[in-house]
Image 1 (tube, rainbow, N blue to C red):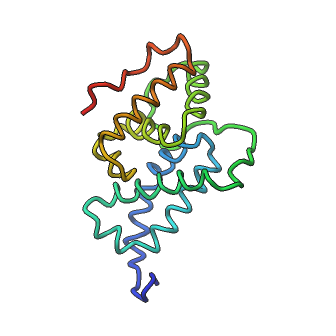
Image 2: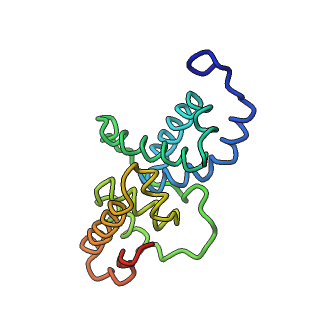
Length: 179
C-alpha cells in the first residue's frame, strides 16, 4: 500500500520498472561510474517510485519524472559519508549501452577519469545532455533549474573536462549554440 492507504497497482508498477530498468541503470552508471553504486541509486529510486507511484503515473511524462528522481537520488547520495568508501574494480561494460563503436580503451579511461573530477551537478548535466542525448529543456526540468543554468553548467563542465584532459579537448563540443 502507498502512503494514505491507497493500494498500488503492482502489475503496472512492475511492468513499468521492467521496461525502464536498463535505461535507469545506464544513467546511474554514467553518473557515478561504479556498478555497485549505480545499482544502489537505482534501487533507492525504485523504492521511492513505489511510494509515489500514483504521482508518477499522473505526471505528464513518467519517464522524465523517474529520471528526475534518479538524478536527485544521485545528487543527494553524494553527500552521504558512506559514498566515500571505494571498492576497487570496474564493470566489464556499461549496462544498457548500445553496441556502437567505442573509442579506444585509453581514451575511454581518460574521459571517465576526467568526468569523475567534474563537479557533480556539471557531471549530471554532461551525462544527461551528451551521453543520454536529452534536450536542454528536459535536463532543466529533471534538475529543477532554468535552461540557462543547464547551458552554463554545460559550458563550465566542458571547460573543466578540457582542462583536465589537456590536448585531447578537440574531441569535445563547445557547449555553445545549444537549443
